[in-house]
Image (cartoon, rainbow, N blue to C red; front, side, top):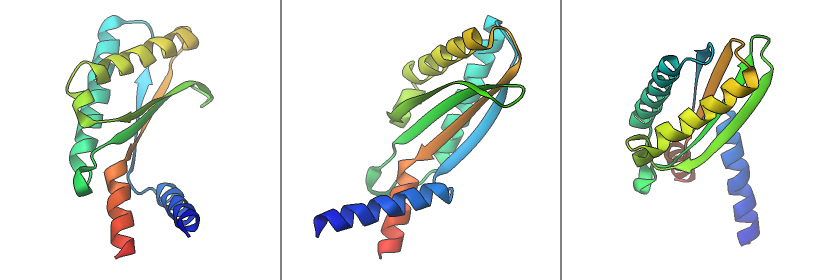
Length: 138
């Protein structure tokens, strides 16, 4: 019976994510190899992540997020992407979060070779998913 329960929960989680529960998205313009612009962009991304985390639910203390970033050219073709994994909010109030965003931007700039484009971020709140699962089960 336990295997069926896990399968059902897995399907419910997939459906919730497809329906946008706990998902937040944003995009920023990428313009080239300027360190000042890169630092400004890192600050914008971190501010967005912190604001998003402030809006999420935290049932049972579940405050983890999954964050993915992608860079695409002007035609919308994805040139590079990276999942930063499952992280705690503290990562974005310390050096770890900004360093990971900065490293991704460095990779994106190398791949884009100075061409303009867009960076897209997707954040998934695991607390929002847990809250919805708890609410539907009740």
